[in-house]
Image (cartoon, rainbow, N blue to C red):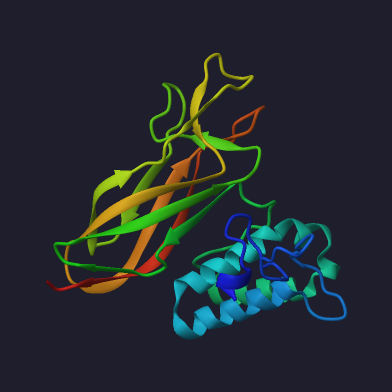
Length: 235
């Protein structure tokens, strides 16, 4: 379901797979004669995460609820299935990961692969994809003086970061800046080369700090995170 229907860039599940003969694709959030497909998908992922302990299922369910946060705030009576999914989330995960309903986030994070396998003493690649909403940009990893750099931090006792490959930035002009700025737009990918430090299984969290701006103003610096399982094998 995730592979065929999920929109990793904007969040939410498409109603159909991607096909060349379709004029348009939709992401139904409201209930009709049948429950909302996105509400049912979120419910299933929440329950699957609770049964299996797989963090990635919970992350996708959370992204679905945050994607349609604006719908829940404006028209809750039409999105009862999504509200049920939100209620179940609050019961199962709210103490650790509360959801704040708001418009869709400016930046989303995806990790590839979804589970990392590495041997002690050897190196494996982890791709960090950042999907930046249309009309927005964030500072590059090496911006001009006075602007916020996009920075990544890896948290796991099983691996260490050997090197980071940052994506090439775009140089763009903005009304609020006297000189062109080095920024990221659209979808960009960092590649983290991680070396196995000690054998074991656990989790790996990537923290990305950034500042998002449009053509008129900049939001306050913030941080997003993503977590995946990691296994480090003995040599």
